[in-house]
Image 1 (cartoon, helix red, strand yellow):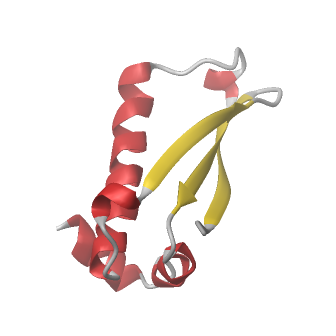
Image 2 (tube, helix red, strand yellow):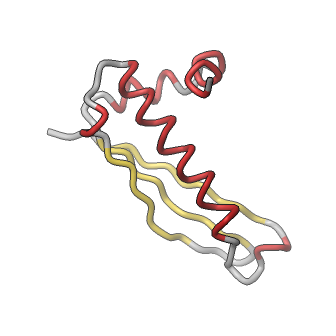
Length: 93
């Protein structure tokens, strides 16, 4: 059985009042977030190929937001590790 964890990411401000964002700004952030999740899973002993990170849209006035869903058996443990700033810095190196 897969565990799933969901979070909402919202970029907001006057520049996003039309609910649009440059792909060249958003794509690197999404790719980096996915990489952090997958590297954390590997550190926790998971098979990298079994971790799925997906997004779905969620828009409010003056913002650009999306939901992120991560599926993996060890995701609950990964969520605990994300509270450790030093671990995140080590993963990004």
